[in-house]
Amino acid sequence: MNQYLALLIYGLAWTVFAYLCGSVSFAVVVSRVVGLKDPRTFGSHNPGATNVLRTGNKLAALATLVLDGFKGWVPLVIAKAYVLQNPVYDFSSMGLDTHTVIETSFANWLISGVAISAFAGHLWPVFFGFKGGKGVATAAGLLLGMQPMLGLCVLLTWIAVAALTRYSSLSALISAALAPVYLVLGAMFVWTDEQGQMSTNPWPLALAAALMAVLLIYRHRENIARLLAGEEGKIFGKKTTSQ
Image (cartoon, rainbow, N blue to C red; front, side, top):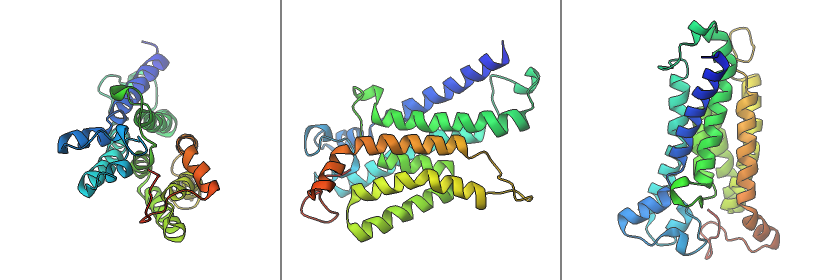
């Protein structure tokens, strides 16, 4: 088999796996398990943790939040762990140096494809009529899987903005927008080898983070309109309208 066709098939297999993982809408699943109304039928109609919280079941909302993040984290971490241990294709037998071509180039793009696919699965889940959530928790899980320090920086940004403004949606928007910036800066100044060179090519992951940010902002367009109109509900306020 042509080596590039093998790489393409391998990459597609990983992205399909990630998309299917992302397509599990835990807001709906958890609500069914604990006997709550389908979150797509009330409130914001968004299958996310905040809408589940509207039922008053905090434990179900917390479970939704954690599982939505976990479903993004899992395929990304598995892909990172096994991309160089491919059981189907022996890249070295194809004349490819696995420590140069695969590790420094193909692996980075594959991980990016996995991240985007898992995120797309949450937004447009094949198991739930392609009607998914806004992606905040899943994006957080994916960023944590890309680089734990990146996930921590994004989380601290969310907390800081939320503490200052009490707007959950604004916190998510700013955190998502800064994620690719943090990733590139981290690769340039923090995640370096002994010679001070970047230990990995950050651009594929930065591109994935930027695309997720654009999609997340798009899914929050109604929240943005309410923010501009001064009508968005605040955290711990009487009205909560964001995910």
